[in-house]
Image (cartoon, rainbow, N blue to C red; front, side, top):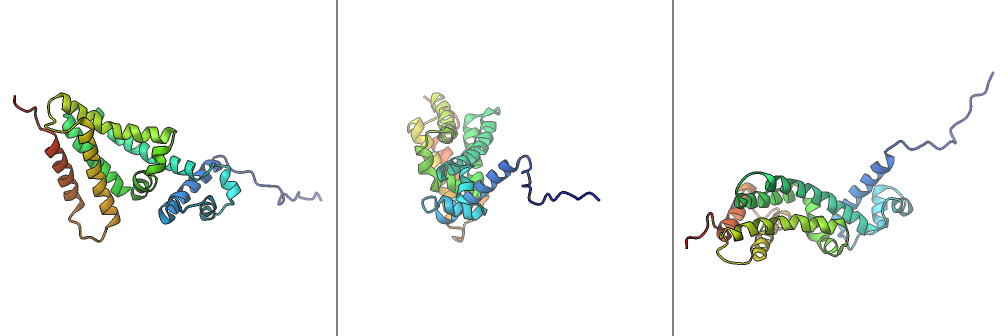
Length: 215
């Protein structure tokens, strides 16, 4: 009788795509750790423990925690850019597009609290200092607002303020609303839909005219 070879000691070959799956696991774990402990209080070792691998194994996928933050931020910004670009590319008055972009931004933040936290609060300073694609995407996303506001200025529909002054006011107001809603969930807010309409309409209607001012 022929003996059956014992293959128990032969390492099992990793299935195709395993590396991508592990990379996704690491990013998901990093996201949880960043939110729980803060970016400054997070370490590669802590993230590795969250995944269930050694720090050495984690370094095979990411050089450091900064690279994890940048990839998480880039992913969130890709989704936000895609949504805003769809709005901008559609037919319509730029003023209405500004309202739609701001509303979409608020709703994204409230639906994706972790991603919002990493891009606009906890990780904002690191993204601003980054020299790679993530900072570039952040600039591209913000630049949508001054681009639209600039069209309003050329059309004589900014009664006061500079293009960037108006864009930054719109930006700060909407980000402030998202931050408060996320950080103070038990305050007793009215319905979110009402707050979004009041915030966006209040800002845009107060800063941008429906039609050029009469001369």
